[in-house]
Image 1 (cartoon, rainbow, N blue to C red):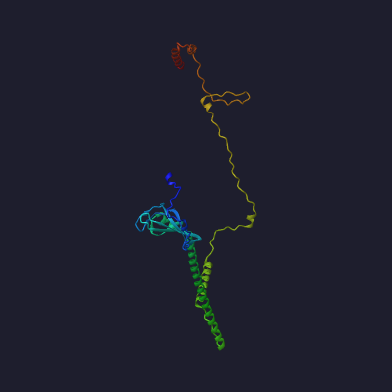
Image 2 (image 1 turned 180 degrees about the vertical axis):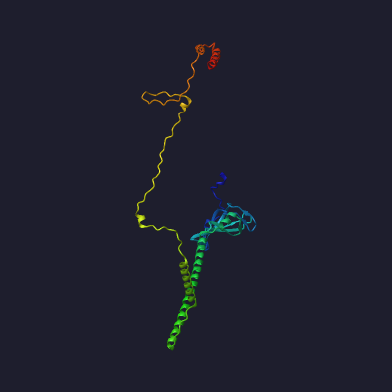
Length: 309
């Protein structure tokens, strides 16, 4: 890499530094242009050669400040060239939609999510629509109010014309010395007649209607002053349920708990068993011996049978 670091420069033999003069050209009166490094903000297709330029490809672009503004936000225009045919492509910023807008030299590729976003109503469009609807609603309301006022004025004017014509007929009759009767309105007469008929029908219906006999008994004053005697109220007392002496029925005697306790009730008489015979007592005396246990039991049974006999 040392060969790239040139410390000295070549000067030709006929070089004359006095001939080098500083020159100032005319200033550019057009819009100010700057060279910037940027990336393609969207994928596009060149209209000159059909080359596709993907989003994010880097370009050396010329930046121009336009006279257009959106809510005092400056709008910039950028110039780039196609990578295949070097055709000029122009696009500018769009602060309203927070995006970029392609002007010429290329066509932006279709983006479905962008179409859905563009179809949505923005806040500014919503405000304009609400103002428009409110103005239309006010216009309709104003028209309805005007129609109602016109109908009311026409009715008032008709009533005034009728009153004026009636007063004119009366004045003319009084001036001529003749009496005239004002013809009543047939609608009012019909209404009054109908009301009178309805009132008469209601009066007759209520007059012919008799109150039903409820069969009420006339109470005298003497009966009212008599004291009222109430029937005795039946009372019920709870009696304890007597317990059955099951032990006495089985022949079991209870031992007395203490001498102070009352004597127990006499148990029902049970037939006492017969006293054992002499032979059974002798057999019972030798019952404890292990050898003669079976023999003793058989003799005891035999002796029991003999006692019963």
